[in-house]
Image (cartoon, rainbow, N blue to C red):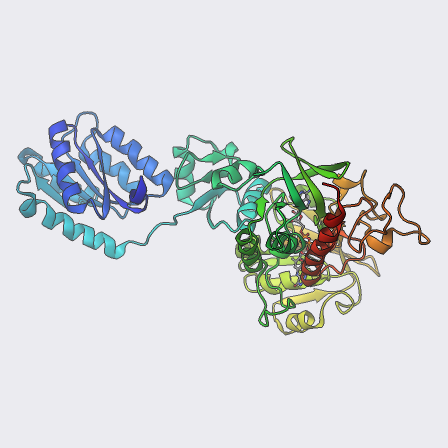
Amino acid sequence: MGQDVEKSVILAVDDEPAVLSAVARDLRREYGKQYRVLRADSGTTALESVRRLKLRNKPVALFLVDQRMPGMSGVEFLEQAIELFPAAKRVLLTAYADTEAAIRAINEVGLDYYLMKPWDPPEEHLYPVLTDLLDDWQGQFSPPFEGIRVVGHRWSAQSHQVKDFLSRNLVPYQWLDIEIDEEAHHLLEFSNADGSQLPLVLFPDGPPLPQPTNVQIAEKLGLRMHPGLAFYDLVIVGAGPAGLAAAVYGASEGLSTLLIEREAPGGQAGTSSRIENYLGFPIGLSGGDLTRRAVAQVSRFGAEILTPLEATGIRTQDSYRFVALTDGSEVSCHALLIATGASYRKLDLPGIERLTGAGVYYGAAITEALACRDKDVFIVGGGNSAGQAAMYLSKYASSVTILVRGESLATSMSQYLIAQIEAQENIAVWIRSRVVEAKGSTSLEVIIIADVVTGDVRTVPAYALFIFIGAMPHTDWVADVLKRDSQGFILTGPDLLRDGRRPRGWNLDRAPYLLETSVPGVFAAGDVRQRSVKRVASAVGEGSMAVQFVHQYLSRVPE
Ligand SMILES: Cc1cc2nc3c(=O)[nH]c(=O)nc-3n(C[C@H](O)[C@H](O)[C@H](O)COP(=O)(O)OP(=O)(O)OC[C@H]3O[C@@H](n4cnc5c(N)ncnc54)[C@H](O)[C@@H]3O)c2cc1C
């Protein structure tokens, strides 16, 4: 394959083997450096090649086709081929007796030229014509999208999940909506898939994947999902800001460090459209940008990142800590950091669950913003994340309405965001308002909103509803081992002491370190921790600090 992967294609079609070899040889000699020359010995095999090229998004610059072939004539082939590559130049190879057919083809298939066989010497009869056509083609040519393409339904939760997974892993992709995009239909047909198998994910190489899981996509993308070692000094679960910071400090300070992430590095911060209060970035930076930089830094120091891979439990044995993984394996370490963060609480109301992914979204403002162009969208929640989402969506949507239960945003949102929202003409804030129901057949159509004081309800058309309400920690998987508060946040350090007494089962002659949990050698940092500040900077700070406690712990751990 090599360089050919990048090249546009010239396809020669002729049923006579000697002629086909000669034409392919002449084409390669003159154009082989710039184009990939393919050949086919019939119209039918040529059409198969054309479909394959379409599936892989490889452009065809020129069809050079014999008119007189059994089964399918050159013109018949071109009729079908140009539907898929309408910009390709078309040249017929004809014998004297085909002249009339060739002239008709000028109108029927927009033939650019017909060449009489034989074309010798090519310098005189072949290259001048083709070079001229190829130059013309180059002039009009805009290179196709080289990456991954996703074909699916706009209102499918599964399509949303695939798009979200790709964008959160910072993988560029092209979205093709089966309802409005003709190209999407061609791709579905050539993949031998049917409409019930969407979303379909197409890669520049290899077969398309119908309805892939995140793990299947990750395998195809070459994301790493298996640890390189059986044992690490430090294992970190969760690659949000806290986990990423801990990985940078752990690896840069000589600890063999493994980071395990179940979705995509970046955590909640990775979904943020603009973080404006992070030190050192006076005009703010996007969560994607912060994540990209952090992942590069982690890798540079040699920590391993496994994603998507979920930790499902922990256990201890002597001085070893074990993390169970979804693939059934375990990885062991001396010190373990839980940095699994939190995510938005679910809104448990009629219609919400059914329409999640089909107009109702948790977070996800970045992934869906483009689709909201010129539409009316609503946001539930009054925190900074809701405010940022409103600002971001207001660039696309015709109106953005923030629904808050209270009397104002002042108690829950930073002043700088409130000022931005007030200055943005297409954002409205409806106070004393709560959603009571979402309705729509295949996607969200209306939401019903109640006044929390009077109870009056009104029904408003809504294209999308973005939910940003209270955090819920990801700690179910450690519930039977670590002490948590009533909401599930992990207790650490002084919060574990009751009347100065250490937690039950604590068998060391020292109190738990500041970020240490009820199990020695197991630490927690970031949003997952009780009373944490729930900010990017504080998560980064805690992740970095945790490594200092890991060093102190390791200095006394028996080998
Ligand atoms: C939209 C949005 C905008 C925000 N804007 C700002 C802002 O402008 N400024 C600011 O300071 N803060 C902001 N925040 C808050 C900030 O992002 C969080 O406080 C911060 O991300 C917390 O970091 P963390 O590492 O503790 O956890 P998280 O960011 O929640 O990361 C935890 C990670 O752990 C992974 N995980 C969970 N369970 C498992 C498991 N069992 N196995 C493996 N992996 C697991 C998750 O997938 C996730 O990637 C925003 C939050 C959101 C959602």
